[in-house]
Image 1: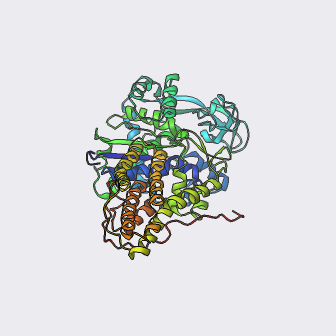
Image 2 (image 1 turned 90 degrees about the vertical axis):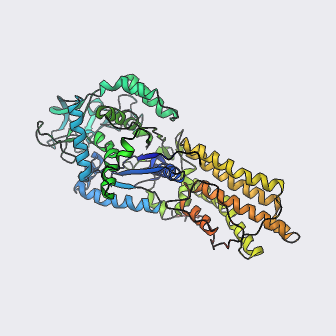
Image 3 (image 1 turned 120 degrees about the vertical axis):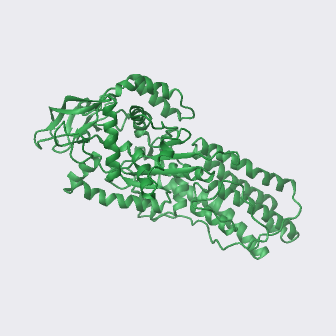
Length: 551
């Protein structure tokens, strides 16, 4: 990668609602892909800033709090620390994972609101909103459920249909019902600021037409939605749990709509990061530098917000970089049903963390990333991926080469003799393979990247089987030494290729060869294992997984 120009890269990742435990669908949809990509871009010399945080103002939190009879803050205080523990367990390499409840976020969001207002993109409008007469309160979007007018799904929410992905207003629902009381709500007048989103149809289409390398389902969905025509949407809501308006002309009890406030976190989190470092203007290198790049990692249901609404907000604000790419993933399903915190589909992430090594779980998920289609995942498939692929191919390769080096050469990397044609072919193939993995990662085709990296391990195993160093050790120890020296070079190259996916074990493999990696991982260069290096004890790289019947 000597010809690569170092770039400022913002890796922006969807903000999870802090109202329930994460599940594998979250990890496969956004968080693991973002981490893999960020680790790779750091390894080629880019200055990566990876940010996200807990969305603490979403109505799912207030709904949960109402159900449990506690405050929204108590819900957040339960799940935000759990998220931080999950990230540590899975080696997700955030530069900052914050919350939307910080003073910095409030300041940035209120300033953003005032800028949009000054630019003529917000206007007051009196409309009718659902009101629960039994509870005597207005109902924000997720407090209303009903039938989707587009696909007929019976449990659509007032903000979005999980079945067809269409964004909704509560009044769009057929047979609406209040989540608070189960009664049919009535319409009542309320005044809010509305966002002149309809004015951005043409500039958004022009911008979308310039996008290259986007996943077909993302760009097609975005173009289709804008082509249908965007409509003005409420920018404020009747809810006190949220960021208050910086002006008081609508009266009390109003906050900025969480849909727009949460995506502004991609703008506020870098500012908070810069403030925490004591360099308050450093964030501008990622947001105002025209050479910087930005990648938004989200699940399919978040595509409208990141490929349409957030770009429109950026255009309305001015002076900010537009997204380079929005590599949105499809859904991970379990038994054909979409993983969902709110609907209890899919095990909690902690269950898997308790039973699988971090890198093993990362591997199984990375091999199943739903980049182009929904991917159905089962516990049996995760176990098969770990045992039959990771352990049997990569782990076995490392373990047997280390074991033979210990047995025949006292754990010291041997000096090679004359190289055969097959030796040279294998050594020359390392750079080709690294470049091919890099091409996949550059294109955010992460599933293809890990498949090619694992092919390196498979090829190395085939090389060993062909040359059989355990046999030549009885007749030609010099040939055995050359074979094992080549095998160590192949292993080290594969460790670099796998490092974005398997950060812990890859660093351990390289360190055992005397190759130290900078934080947070190896440099994307072809490593050299020096003959005469005394290998460190690795032990078994991975353990086979056997789930108990009661699991």
